[in-house]
Length: 200
Image (cartoon, rainbow, N blue to C red; front, side, top):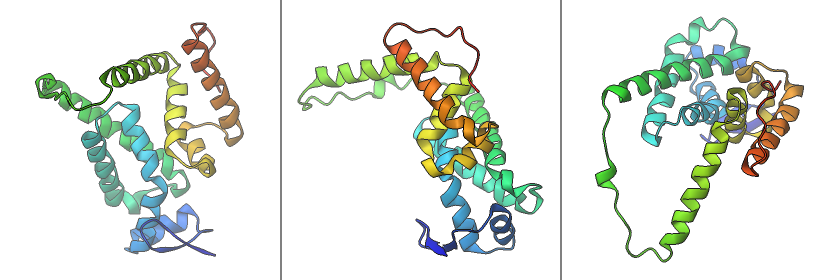
């Protein structure tokens, strides 16, 4: 069976990662496009997990793909490619953050107020709500934060890739997600209890 990826290339849906990586390493463009199609959202989730802006996250994603291209022929376990990409993406995020720490820019003066906005108070309330939610999210155990960010970025059918990226059994992903969301709801309702250990 073949499917058409978002890049318009025909890919065998049953094709495993080992075959895809081997084909991409031999220069087959459709195999490379299939890898990008499969893991692009996962890499973007890594950038968001490190709170990079869109431009920096895009740079991290592109650099991570470049690192994979450079190392395609040396990937020892292609079936664990998701973990390799996540680890490489994290390293690139940390490099970006260290570089930003040396080049701090105060861009508050560049903020432009849209005087034609019909309901500025509504926008302010929305920003305050979002800020509060992110504050609660930041209080979750790190593993919960990583899992929720990755699950938002990948398709629900990609649990095998989430399993590799998180280092947890596929069967534990759903229950762990439910526990993490429950903790987030408890925090948001003012009854948070983070005394439990990390999930999973």
